Amino acid sequence: MKTFSRYLPTALIMLLLPAISWGQATAFTLDPSSTIVVKGTSTIHDWEADVEEMDISIVLDSDELKKGSSAGSAVESFALSVPVESMESGKRKMNKKMYEALKKDDYPDITFNLQSAEFAAGSDSKLNVRGDLMVAGMTKTISLPVNVTQVNVGSYLFEGSHSLNMKDYDVDPPSAMLGAIRSGEEVEIVFNIIVKEG
Image (cartoon, rainbow, N blue to C red; front, side, top):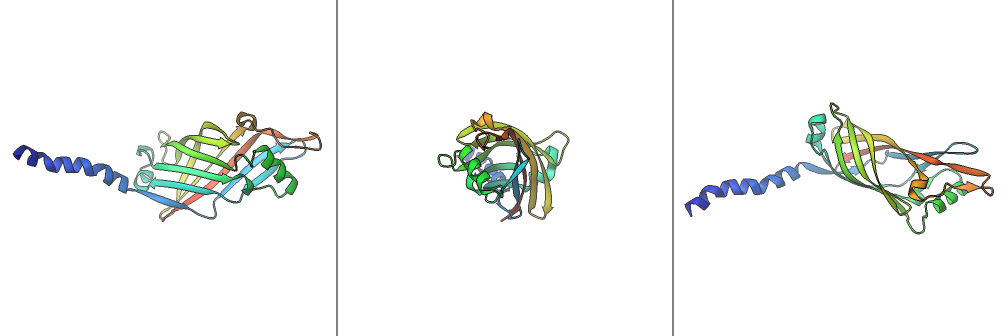
């Protein structure tokens, strides 16, 4: 009994440590000023589509973010979902072709789920991000650099871009006029996502 009593405080500390560490992580919400723009080319002219609706779930460890390159996992979790129909090019026919190419009826959302986000060596603002991107029902693991800056107290900006080939996701680039006008295979996703505590 004496031996058990002697080790009880140590056992309690060991049990509580994960809870204490987890307690530092905080769920953040999306700021409405956040933007995602998809940029592409065609045989006629370049085009853009603004994402007008997105849903995110993000948990950050603010203490780790402030440490920069010495931090561990500053981003505990991140998930993004974009309804295909929320992509707006400003041209109704272009939108329709884009939704068809992205197989909207079968796969109404484009999603990204984080695997890891670690600060680049020697940097306190650049994250090396890795995660699963699902487009038109096909999932690929991608890696990309993301810059993170504190905007205000309890508010952070994540910005960057990622280029992809639509063919890699089994997406046929949209075309018009019996193929006379065709989008290029490569598109660039440019994002500026602001999250705030609470």
